[in-house]
Image (tube, rainbow, N blue to C red; front, side, top):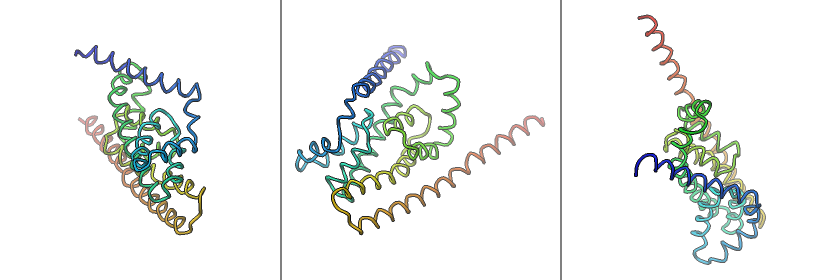
Length: 233
């Protein structure tokens, strides 16, 4: 398969995926999947319910179904701790799946045919500050699938993408799972556990932000020194 045919296949696949997502959004189909609907699906599968739930976590957000509703459902069905673990696993696998889909279908296509000017600047910033960029993207609350695709079409490394995703999405998963559990019953022990988790994650986030934020500055200083050396010759 030559390069031209490969690009054509990627464009067709990318267009089909975008068309499906737009269709689901315009028809309101993704909004029909509410808490009750997800709960019935998961609880109706018996012992396989954890695997079914993880499967929903992987596929649905990448089709722009609201991930928050799914996470709350996990808290309702499985309780806080188990629901939290399953949502983290599902969210992690969903992030990896979305990243590779976007990287395979969209990275070269978008860079070659679209947004050549301003996208090149955005892509460089995302690539140079991969962890910090992904951490901020996860926290600001874009649709989860859109976050995955943005990470995939950018030049950020998989390592920084995973690290930023795990730290960025964990507090939200903890809070939403607790919210799902609290719709059934309120347990003070669960509340304090959630609070400790949030404190831990935010401390870790601040630590990594400070650590990674220093690197671009060092790089800028090196570039400035290199330019001065070059001009001095």
